[in-house]
Length: 214
Image (tube, rainbow, N blue to C red; front, side):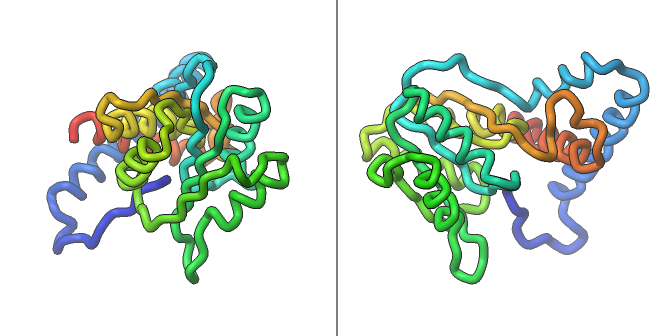
């Protein structure tokens, strides 16, 4: 899921300014790349964000909250893993959306409508506000449920950072794989053609860089 910043300090604070400078620098690099680099290189740049683990049997598919794709792309991707026999359970993380409603109130019925028995679905409504908070909540829960290996299923551009965060949260005790779901706003072979795609690339690259040095 996407993180949200806390209350800003007067003047924004040094951390906020560092993030702004990083975003501006990335935006400048991206703009130059769009005009100077060819299609294959731009597709390759998406590889900094998108990762997919080789398919293997795992205990579960963990669907992260914060779905932006129309039609529930993350849930549908996890259902594909389930129906192909790669996982035996779906774990649906669901942040609070507002008015007391949790994302799991939509994701669980969707998974059931696609053929997943409710007995094979673990719904986890929560108040997590970032991927890190989500991982800190889910990893201990997964261990208690006997889930030792799982696919992190998230939007394609979020997979590399999400897998790294879950690996750290698991403390080496869990096998964490990545399974990217297609995203309406970030087609790997054309993300630079839309304003939203460019925005996602710059923002997620900054978040990935920040997570590496944090």
